[in-house]
Image (cartoon, rainbow over all chains, first blue to last red; front, side, top):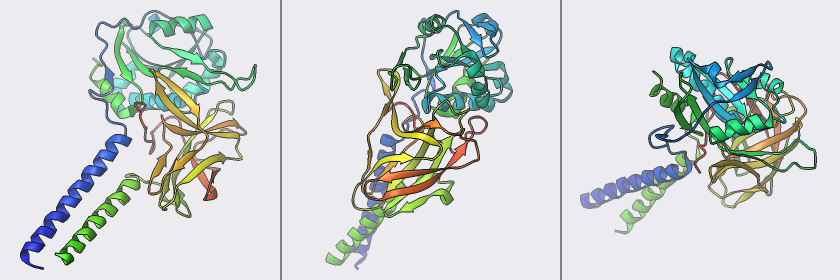
Length: 208
Length: 172
């Protein structure tokens, strides 16, 4: 090979590698979760999200929003018969609270069911503790759940069961994470599906 | 030019091959020991999330890579620990997270199908025993061409460290 050919060959090979890497990167962008722009936080300026609620904890005790005053409450709405998204989010929330270290101790992770028929207060007890030792599980009467869901702009819809009376129905629901500040007002709204690191990072920027 | 052209195409092919292999093998494949090869299919990192009791369904995940030249299809899955095992997909639909059962899923030649949290998953219903962290459970995948492929699901805890879990993200 002449030096010119060697130079050409080297150039072409380098170009091929560059193109190949660009292709891989492009493919990754299409298949991998893109880190959400601006992180896990969703802008909520002016949005009227949140408000008072009255529910029942896993010991049967009545709990209202006022019981969380002075602390942060990190709330997720879902249902325990959900095999994929809800446990993923609750796991991420539990982990994020731990990742924050001492700052995380000011946060109470809270799970509110949108499926009170199956998720009775008692049924939630072992479930929430599996995700985080301090996680609070809240259920209530159907009307109470509907009220808190409405206040927090949570939408849910019970699917059909395999046969009448069966309890194998699925529930469609919105999947966001709500941070209430020590004053009980919405301090942050976080998107789902971002994983514990992004949640922790989002919380860090809000915690005072 | 003929020699260098041939060399050039070889270099391009080599680069592309290296890249496609790189693209197919998960960047983090911690549990190679659990990978199972069946013909041209490789099933990697099969795992399930621990469950609290038996009344709620369990979720399981894995990655299937097709190193062959023809497509195969995952038709269904079975496990002795559950009465039923369905293929499901979580999708974001008009702001709502929905789960829909899927009939079968194609693994294209040279491609991969990834079951991961927030996306494709196996739903284990009618559990005969709770899925306990650290106690693997057998799972059989039934493919159209590769037939029955047995793997072992590692069971990961709900709390504590989020092991090698990758979240697929819900913004698809």
